[in-house]
Structures are given as structure tokens and as C-alpha cells.
Length: 483
Image 1: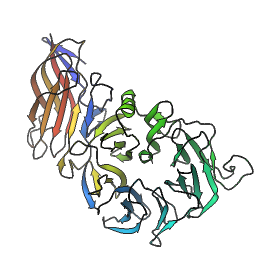
Image 2: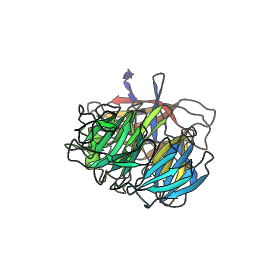
Image 3: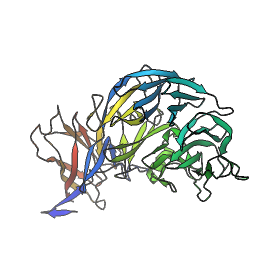
Image 4: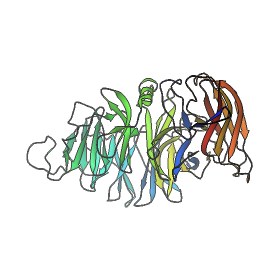
């Protein structure tokens, strides 16, 4: 709502918001980095993303997988070729070794104390009841993905475009218990459970299979046999998977970096029905024209303080981008490390009532605690940035008399600064920085002002929030004079 008094017009500034992807800065360069929007009694507030600190430092090697077994309250982690078990006191021990040293690893567990691990080459089974670790041979199958549903291990063999199931709660594999992607000539990527349904996912299409013990064999003809899954022929899914490590299935949501044969890469999700795109046209433009190696990507799905967040990282050096979608606020934002490169989170689990993750760094692999109670990245200042939407008025020239922020002040911290910079050329460049030093502990005045910002007809405001403490931003306004 615009208010006018004595020649001045007071207009709201959308400082509480997410990243609005656009093709060109002139459209908008609205962006939120390492911050998120939270709601309380219809009051929208911009707050910090969670910080992190290292809990365990592993010997060198690529962090490849993270899985939590609630039955024994332990974490399974794969770093390099070593499989570690982490207990509730964060002691860790090696329980086995893989034949590979890099690439994605996938883990699932059955009800018989067996944890299945696949690395794109073999299936390995760690039995925590017997404390054994062994490689399991499946004739004519190269395991590339593993899942578990209705007492069966489900093995994807991407090399041969087939998937096979185990016996009930064991690791015995009958060669007749095999099925194929049937909808189109396609490359099988992964077979993923969502609720009680299997999503059989190719590169360009997906199929839904349901547990039906009176179903027919994989060819769809003949008498009923023991293969328990049957394809749902009533639904056609024209989205496949571009990057298997981006597949996340949790909280009754399946989300992934998808691929459509007619339109290319996009980010999609489903709660069981037809997939919906999370990408807008600006993000699709970035995925198709800016990201050079979209298949080199990883993702996590976590629930944090009521927010379900999907974070995807394009970790190729030419791409160097992490973005996250908040299903609660329905907003995208950017995430970085302390140097404004991609965020270090690679895989995450919920363990001992906290979120933990492994990082990307092969030289310094670790297990990290992720928490809203942490306001730094392992002791380093978090880069928190908000670029507001453009301030325009029919391309008229404006005199910007004042920018006022409504936010929390007076909380303890070593220091708290807000750096504001301005772009007057459509977001191409930001000029000199104006610094505001926030009030010390106990001084809780809730207004911050920047005065006399000059002439503009397309004004962009960038705020950087610098502190080892927290920030809570609830709004902003501008006083302008029309010339």
C-alpha cells in the first residue's frame, strides 16, 4: 500500500521473499541467499538458514552415502571405499569395504537386520545382528540403485534396463523375479518407492507399479505368478530422471531433477499422482542454458522446524550452484558456503532428533550437525544476502529519500552490520556499500534507516547481513519523491 504525505510517497519494499529466477537482470534480480521465510500468525519474516558444525572428521575419501537405521539407532556412512557405522555417541568404526572408491552409493534395509549397499558395481550386505559384511552376487545383474518395500529389496540394473526383487526379508534373488521398463524404449535409471507404489523411472518416462500378489508375470501374459508387482496402465508419466543422486523420497513427496523428451531438464515432484514442475520459466532457462553439466548434481530432502526443504547442488566447477525449494513457503532461495561457492551439504539424515549431513570435500570429509541454533558455518560467518525486487514507477525518475528496515536489534553478538548497496542500471552492477552498525545488546529499537540515496528510475537494493549472530527481518519501506 502506497502512502503519500507532503509530496513524499511511502511504498513497501519486498524484503521478505525468495529468489525469483529470471532470464535477465532487467526483468528482476530478486535473490535470497542463505536465508528463508518463516510464518507465524500470518506474519512473514526473513530469518537465517541453519548453520552447521563438524561432528566427525573422517580419513580422506569421497563422501558417498549416508543412511540412518532406526532399528539400531546408528548411521551408516560410506567414505571412499570404507563403510562406517556411527553410534549415538558419534563413535565410528569400519565394518566393510567396497570395490569402488567414488560415485554415488545407495543404501536400504530390510526387517532381518540386513543393510543392502550398492555402488554401481555390486551389492554388499552388512548384517548388524551377525556383525558380518559380504558381497552378494546376483547373476547377470549390475546393481546401480537399491530400495526396500513390502519386505523386498528392489535392485535396479541400469546397465541392462531391468529391475529385480529379493525374497521376503532376505538377499536371495530368483532370476524369474525380474521386470523391465515397458512404456517406451528408454534407459532405466532407478526404481523408487513412494508410499506403497514403486516409481520405475527411466531417462524420459516413468511407470507406476503396485504390489499385487495376484498379478501376472513381467510380460503381462500367462497365469498368475509370484512376482508381486503389477504395472498401473492407467497413468502415463512423461518425466524421467536426468540425475539419479537428485532423487529424494520422504514425507510422502518424491522430488527429482527430471527430464522431458520434448522440453529438457526441469525439477519436478509428486505426492503420488501426476508430477508437477517446481521450476518456473526463469529456472528452466537456467537449467537448459546456463547450467552446463546438470547431470552432475546431488540433492537432499529434509524437514526442519516444520519446513520441508529440497536442496539441489550442481557441483561441477563450471556450474557451482546450490538452490533450495521450501515446500512450506513455496519459495526458492540460494544456498552457499562461507565463500559463496555451492553449499557443502551432500547427503542428510535425521538422527538423535537432529539433522546431520556429509559434505562434498574429498580432502576433508566429515559428518556435520545442521541446526537453526547454529549461526555460523563451522565458525565462519554465513553470507546472508537479500536483493529486493526492482523499485520502479512508470519509468519515472524518483528521488529516494529514505529506506527503512523493520527488524530485530539488541541481541548479543560480537558485531552486527548491515551493508546496503544500490544498482541504478537494471541490476547489472551494484555501487558503493553503505554500512549500518546495529545497536548493541539490550537496545531493541526496531528500525534501521538509510538516508538520501539519490535519483533513479529503476532502483535495486542489496542487503548483506554480517554477524556471527542471528537476523530477524520483518519488513522495509522506501520514501520517494517523484520528479
